[in-house]
Length: 157
Image 1 (spheres, rainbow, N blue to C red):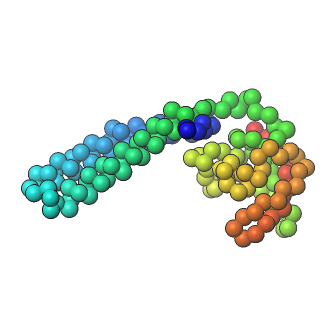
Image 2: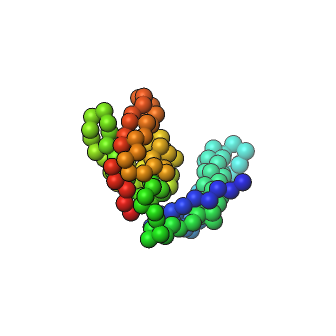
Image 3: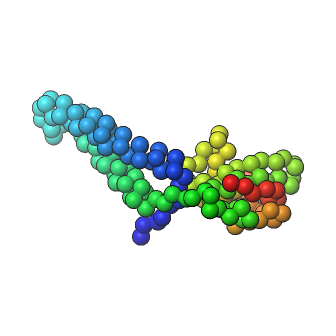
């Protein structure tokens, strides 16, 4: 069963660019490596040939997975987002109730997550815990170091 994933327009463009790079550049590089290795003689004892064929198999698997993701991707219309609840592409400001530290994250798909840009995946423990919550809700989230309580302070687009 294939799973539909939701992306921003920019996120889907990045996936398409990566797919194009793999198909147009990386495929030809590996084909050249295989051809060079084949020219070196006996293929039964040719480690370069074996390595190039294995790299080709891994590349084709990556291309196949990416094609499936792109085929099942949907772009989210940010103007239609409901800001009464934390949803994908919501900016959520949360307050750690242990140390009163306030943080703001944008909830995104797994492929678009980037902690430096304060974009966390909806499938991460914090992202999953925030989904569907409203301003004022107290959320207890289990992370590797234990449980943390957060208060949802603000939700925006």
